[in-house]
Length: 210
Image 1 (cartoon, rainbow, N blue to C red):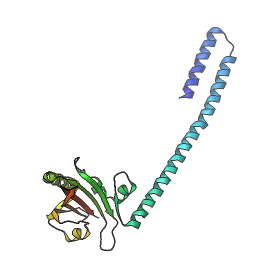
Image 2: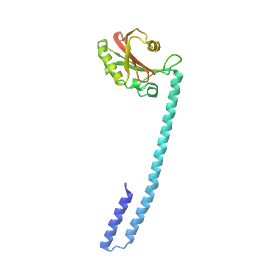
Image 3: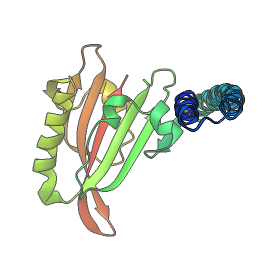
Image 4: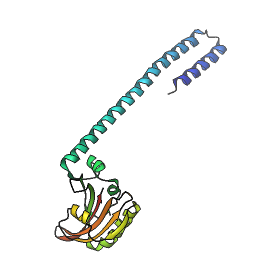
């Protein structure tokens, strides 16, 4: 509330009322004293509120910073990790390229895998999910278009030595395509035979080696 405007209006109204009724100026004076006291109280309250906001903001920033440091330390300690959207490891350990990929609504078993790399193994972020065999072609085309929209370009098809050595596949790949970015990061799109409770399915894996 604008206390200054309210007090000015009250003082003006009182002065005009007194000029018509002949009431002594004491009442007007009392109202002005009351307004001055009100304004003096309002100022420190506003300053106190701003100080509290800055203190809370600083505390929250410190907490978020410590959580980020702890998460990064955890990722380097475990080296390989599986995560899901919403967790600190998802935002700090999975590349933005992989996070930006949209998964079909009917896909099952969506999972994010990451690794900080070790020795000859490059750091990587991976998205995997399963779809019915009849949906493979449409989903492949969709993922191919998404990757190119994220500024990675195809460099050929077939197995890639660097990518294959870093994949955690337990079955032969059905189809593979490699992509590269302007910063020479490697992205591999691959499909594998899989199953869900005995029902055949195809697992997609999109891996970003950065």
